[in-house]
Length: 566
Image (tube, rainbow, N blue to C red):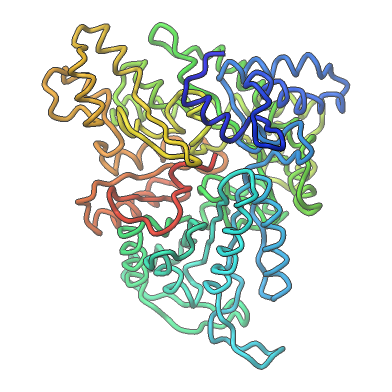
């Protein structure tokens, strides 16, 4: 196997089996064999040859063309056996529900999963509690309890605990929620997002007011200017990177099973909206592996997509779920999310700058191809194995539409550590820098962009002095030895305008069933008006959510949005 030193460091730190003394007792090849055999054992349920499919799955993983989400690599073939990365749990307005959900979240976090919650059903602070005669403390206070519990749980867990906390924009405590992470040390294990409604966006556009609604009584408790709330969101996001936004009505318009329930929250990085108690298993194909002679090998890509969809569908059957309710929901809708990594690498290999109109056009063309290929693969599985059990009443249940095995098939995840293993760029992000250090699980990794140095050698402008300069600088601005065309090709995340980041996200979202994880990078000098403009543009462009991060700001909370969650 062709693994980099950084890939080996990550595998040894996080994924490979260890003995009781913490010594690594598994090779990367053995890990992929373990995962392939565990997942392929599902094939026996359908009368297929599991050893044949184990070989197929091993080949696409060990070739680094496809990797499943981290919990699958960590847990497949082990007693824990929990393979899903993404979960959403309901939080209802009672002490029992709040702490039952916390207990359930603990089991998920311990197994390496990330959990999303909507706290929108909790009564606001100072509201009456009839059973005790007291007053409620509000959603933010319970989020603090969840955050503290996560600190304890993650110590013994498979990886850093990650949560998403969501509150609807019409909740009476919305301003407290928006401002909470401006305070140092608050909710460090949470990403937070405001669920914006179409009604709110209309009020914002028309400089109007909207009603705050007590979720307990359903009564309107007051009115507030949409602009005032939006300004507070912008101020917090400008300062800290939180909150992000999710456009909740748009998400529910794309809900494939509205007869089963409404979406309330997403997973921690925002790319996977889910129903309460629902889970999803994700995987990503490495696009950098499908460029041959400056062209995309669509035939090989389609073949690997079919294998990947089968892998993810099999994973649902062998998964050991932390709760019966989650098992019932996941097996009812059989949601999977196949996405991509290595997008920036593919563009470089094709000679297309990330922020060129050709890149945006290719993003749409490529993602449409992937969506169509995943649905064809899901339809083929449905012919042999049956459609997902909740198919009747779903959006696909109409004449002329194919029966599908999976209610969703595509998701664009951030692929933080997976892309290190695969030695490719993460998700659909541009290259972060041409050389940089990053810390993951207390392991310092140095990364340099091999494509740039390969091209520098091919075109004859490579030198040791240039290498040192690029490594120290991290980008090509002001380096005269590098041709202008190469500078355009290797623009880093902070050299790309926010509008172009959003355009890329929107291009992929157009043909993605679930949602798209993408950081909208901004320079430190960006103003609050730039953040506001980005938020409005993301809504207008059809994105399902948005996260902005201004360079050099002190992010007071967790960094899981940008690095660790796959």
